[in-house]
Image (cartoon, rainbow over the protein chains, first blue to last red):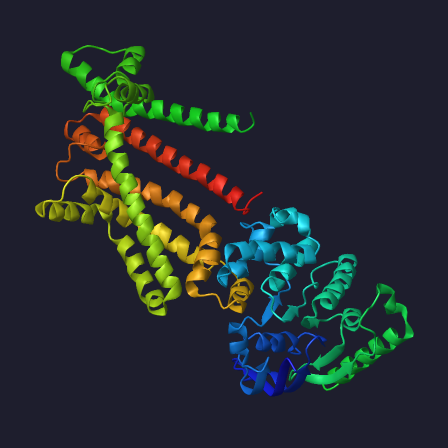
Length: 256
Length: 287
């Protein structure tokens, strides 16, 4: 297994007493999985992702990524992280932005150029390497940020609502592309979203979370095949899973 | 055109007020002279004489313009009467001080952003340093350094640096902290070092703040240099020109030197502004 959390807890001290951001989270992600965290705001889905990335430190329980601590896994360049905003540097070209992690990690110059071109082609931005971010649409910028996360060949891709700020048409297309990219590369993807159709369409495993305290309400293994055309969303199977996710979200919220 | 008109209107208004003030302020001397020689002066005669005095209380604009023109174009630029030569002396110390001050402000800002102890301790001192009147401290610095055998450009540049480091420090502390949490988190996911974060994110992000600071800093450096030229009988530089003008009551010379300083400041700020526009456009901060 690639990611394993056992009784993971995270409490933040605040002026109004401690806030339980994560409570007794148990989670297993296998290699090649596409796992989505879904839930209302405050359910800890982003916090859990940030724990896996070692951007937050859990206050209890255990968490291993590729058999290491989260910190060691980050040092070993285990994952690429995609944020909600593309966050491209305006002073760098698209290629320059994708080269950023490679420069930091000290790849040789020739290999940098090779890798940049390879991931640009992978996200279908092959012709846009010399453009600047402002010359690209929001969807293209987000594709470039995915390419940046893929550039150094991490086996895991952590994505925090990467398409949340995009309109639905662009979002559909990027979802489709992301699935193809996942099938082609065999990466393990952990994906945070608050869209039920997005979670069901993309995932092999849907983790439904609920707030106060942030916890896992239900884990749904998707029976959908790995190859998914967009119109799979009209099949009874898809609708049944979406319904199950909605029910679980509802259940989780009932304790409020 | 609709940008030129308001500017010309304001300029015209200033000239009118200035001429009016020159007449009012210089009239006393004209009347006094007339009373001594026991002659009467008509209004037209009086108006003329308020604007042609050699040492007027307030020189009329055209007198200042003439003084400025004589100082700039009427002399060899190697002459001690040339404003260009004096401005050159002031400019060299200003630029040296500006470079020193900018470097100091930048280094302190980098220290403050990376070190908690410096964050807590440096800023109050920096602010305190600017509350000391420069006019009080400049002569002491000049005299102390002169007694150590250090004369010429360096003491003036130090005073200029003392004034110009502060805006750079304040601007760069803000600029280096400009990247948001997400941008910093991104570099953390790459396990980037502090040095890499500084070089690849913080410094480029701070460029717009740097230029805003540099504009204030260069003007401050010029003021610092001129103040440093005032004491200890300096013989070169716009400050020295101001001082000798005031010794001998040469008001036209004082005003010409003042305008030369103002023109110099405007040119320097404009040059930085041009560099700012070009750089920010190149870096994609403005479109």
